[in-house]
Image 1 (cartoon, rainbow, N blue to C red):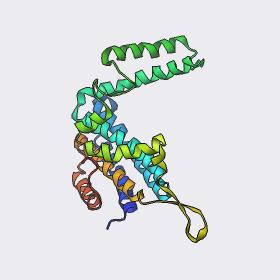
Image 2: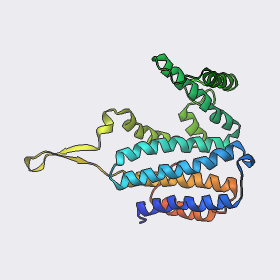
Image 3: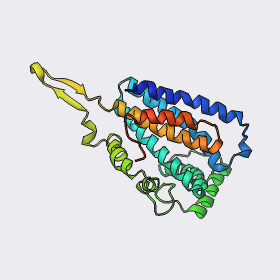
Image 4: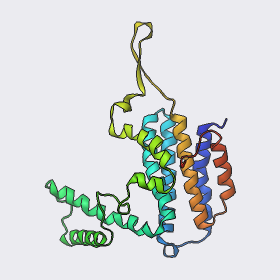
Length: 247
């Protein structure tokens, strides 16, 4: 059996190889298409999220690691969807202008004045009007009209993971009674003490490493870093222990 911590750490460390081979290609900001630029930035975000999951699990904070996994899964689904539907990349990127204006709007609604420069404020809301005219964002979501996050999952064949992973991890985010199921009282010997079920820590490591390797694979395919053999070998060892997150 592969040690889950060692394997997750190996996957994390491999990001250095991908980064070095990418840099050897000599890409410049201006030479990258929007999807490529987004993918290059996301590679670093993937590294940070996997590092966080490893750190939390090592310190026995499995529930907190699950919260990170939930955010990780949202990123994973988004990247895979955009890889298949590149006509929506600019919609995703320009959603940032929508969110920036909404944040200012919310603060002003409560009597705050986050921007004192009238020209800057005018620019923010001008960009908001422009992207809304192009994309018509709804419900503060970037998704193409008519799609939900569940719909995105089904588009990339991750409907099973939405039901069995994402919904399950949502318990800890929304703090319903199921989020307390890890805790139990030990009443042996007529004393009462608290115990925490730690059975999920290794599962979190596997899921995070699996998603990381899949995104590494998208990066390798896009930029021709020549890492496919290494990535498939690590993915094979990982999936000896647990099924694919994309199932």
